[in-house]
Image 1 (cartoon, rainbow, N blue to C red):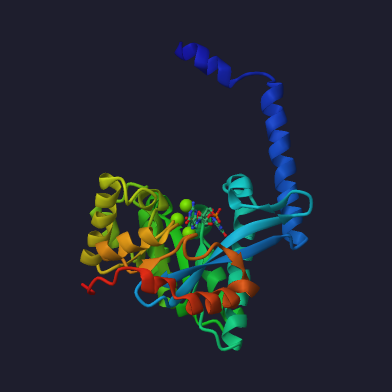
Image 2: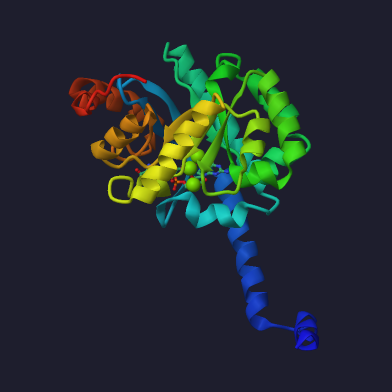
Length: 292
Ligand code: C2E
Ligand code: MG
Ligand code: MG
Ligand code: MG
């Protein structure tokens, strides 16, 4: 059997595999064109404080405004980009665009913190820190402290020592870090203690059924306690209803992000949304448990 498998690896010509390689190449060409034609855009999703309703920042989320297919979400094209030669150019476009937006808001007198998702290879690439430093210098109106980088637990663990070194150097620049999709990876408490991250983002898969599933509720509670014990902030992702928000508040998590607060939106809609959000004050309908 082993011999069979070994033989299969030296398959002479597999038309199906060849077709897939061609297709992948064409798709990457199309994404590269999109980058050149300004078809990539960032949407921004608000992150709020559940007791006060205050906007604490926005997460930049990549979209492809495709001329024929309309607005494409990252699931449609980022898997192809990851691990390809486009990973770094796309990642740098995202960072630069977010910094430009932050600088623009700052000049309008708006203090908006922006979180940017960073892929594993981009973060761990040797020139990440120097490129980040250059980009920050290009946008002097955007204070580095208002930039937060979101990395996946799995990215940080791929090469712990390298990740820690990079995170520490970015921290010296004043930039913050969040661990994204927290709870879906395998980070042990030891890892978490070593990683210089400021914020844990509870993965939305635990929030979804927080009202009906005691296990999920227990996990969320555990993450919130863990964050407290490690002196990290914590935010709940995927808050789709006020009830989700109420459950988070009850468990001691005061920050939230999700469709129940706002969907990701183009930059120019952010302050219209904020006016409406402040006017309606939906957070005042959340039970106000005494602060811990
Ligand atoms: P993520 O960083 O965990 O971002 C949260 C995702 O959940 C976003 O999907 C957001 O639109 C979605 N979301 C927010 N609130 C809710 C909610 O209440 N319910 C549900 N069901 N979903 C909600 P999106 O924009 O499709 O992005 C998916 C993932 O793609 C992101 O997950 C992130 O890992 C990746 N991504 C997005 N933009 C970038 C980028 O610029 N660079 C990199 N490297 N990755 C990105
Ligand atoms: Mg994220
Ligand atoms: Mg996430
Ligand atoms: Mg995710």
